[in-house]
Length: 333
Image 1 (cartoon, helix red, strand yellow):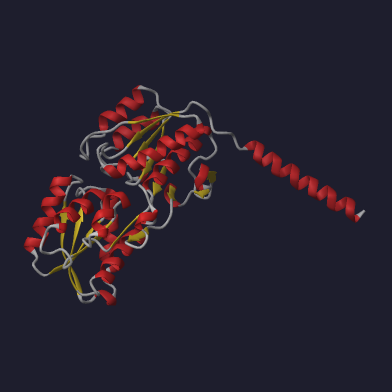
Image 2: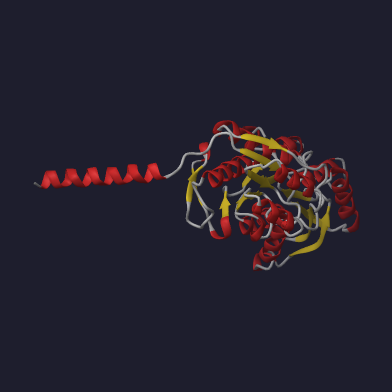
């Protein structure tokens, strides 16, 4: 009897598991998904959207990449309106401004489109999910921890950011400033936050200006792939090479030469392709009814595995990674 009871229990559990699985709808085929990065000529955004295209192929979705050539606050509006007119199932957006796009995103949502932000968020009301590269606090604090280590926790530092309105940049900078309040940084001082507007030449000029304006500068954090590579290009032929520590967020392929020639000792990032990949799977899961966006809901994202939706619809890809001369050749992106 005991054996029979155990067998019945096992069968019941198996049946319940099968029922639960059957109740999870499959991803719909042929979904129309628009990827809208900050700007299309930014190397980081190219890699990011490549992940979305990869995911689209895996799930049989019609994924396209559109976007402006500049990262202005209003530059993405026409592309949102076009997505509405084309009756796209989902929009995956890296927002240039947290609030400027809200009226247009409201129209998109009213049309039935699912909105997922990646990399740079809107206000919570503008979307259902936000795919964050890593915890914003962790990124900001890690940048200060790294530059502190590079300059021996002593001296003046500056930040070379993207645009003044970039949501992700401003959040990271806020946490950098919080980290700098800790006792270990008592001999370090943030003297300037400069903005290169995610433009290569502007960032190059701003880096030059920082070094000329602050002769005692010991370190620069540039938490933007455009900024750090442009800053490194200036620094590589400057008398300040080896004297000013430049770090931030960049891709290995951008930064490899600067690491190998000693311009940059170490920098950080995640794999941006994973951000676009996860965002596209999340959008497809929303449209297919696998998830609604509530905290605690889980879904599967191909090769990245299972993810859980957090507070305010945030989903974190993973922690930032530090690249240096010892490991940079292991990566190709």
